[in-house]
Amino acid sequence: MFYQSVVRPLLFRWDPENVHHFTMALLQNPLLAALATLGSTIQNSSLRRTIFGIDFPNPVGLAAGFDKNALLLPVWEKFGFGHAEIGTVTLHGQEGNPKPRIFRIPEAQAIINRMGFPNEGADRIAQRLEGYKSNGNWPKIPVGINIGKSKVTPLEEAPGDYLGSFQRLERYADYVAINVSSPNTPGLRSLQTKESLSRILEPIQKANSRTLPILVKIAPDLSAEEIDVVLETMEQFHCAGIIATNTTLDKSSVPLKEEGGLSGAPVREKSTAIIRSIAQKTGGRFPIIGVGGIQFPEEAQEKLAAGASLVQLYTGFIYQGPHSVKRILTQL
Ligand SMILES: Cc1cc2nc3c(=O)[nH]c(=O)nc-3n(C[C@H](O)[C@H](O)[C@H](O)COP(=O)(O)O)c2cc1C
Image (cartoon, rainbow, N blue to C red; front, side):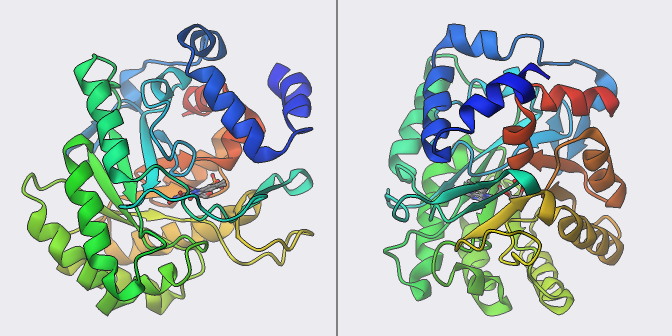
């Protein structure tokens, strides 16, 4: 409650992206990280699960986008997360879209963002990950690496761009998520068609010597037919699972109409409906990571009941604070 009544009102006075960088910088200090996460973890063997061959200490993970450059990779488990998905990483380092590019909508417990994948690029991030391995700071929780297309790479050359990131980063990942669903890189969502997705997945699976689980992250705005095509393509290329969903372009339920993707409470039902329909269609063949609008324990439970094997949160973590993961896990 301290977070909601004192910390959040203070943080929400500032520009959202500045707050993000400020808190990320504070948390890189081990003492401050220890203080901020005090009492946040929970160990209970009943929360463990093995999904696509990986052991997760609990089903609640950090969604992609929060730690694009893996700056806090050793810290996320201290917040109680059972896995962390870093990225989106692109082959070439890039600045992303002009600022401002994150907008809060507190009355709707939502965010609109049009970040456009600002990140240091696959080589630099691989070096950072190597550093964590070599100096003993590698986390105990599984690490997902989410990869996307660099803005400078034309859409028709997307397969080589994804493959380049995959080759540089695969050795650090417990799973790799192929992001074809961000609304903020022009044309990226068009890569969710059968032909485009096949051209990306085929070379990645050829290069995938460790048979690392490959997941595809989809948009909540796909039609049922489009989802069927994604599932068919994933099956053809032996993907391990699906992440549903990214942010939505549908802003009909919120007063702010900034360009970008909407996340948080307004996307919750849409994302849960997609999870339910995928689970019914596939009969559990594809484990699902459910993400979209989870803030409270019942909402995580709702996604798991709909057929998700794991869940993730981003916006809910901002609105509900550092103890939100523990609150969810306690109820689960
Ligand atoms: C500011 C912001 C940046 C994001 N960046 C990424 C990203 O780089 N890659 C990605 O796959 N998803 C990204 N997402 C989407 C989240 O991972 C998640 O799929 C979406 O926000 C729905 O979950 P939520 O309602 O819990 O936030 C971003 C979301 C936000 C709010």
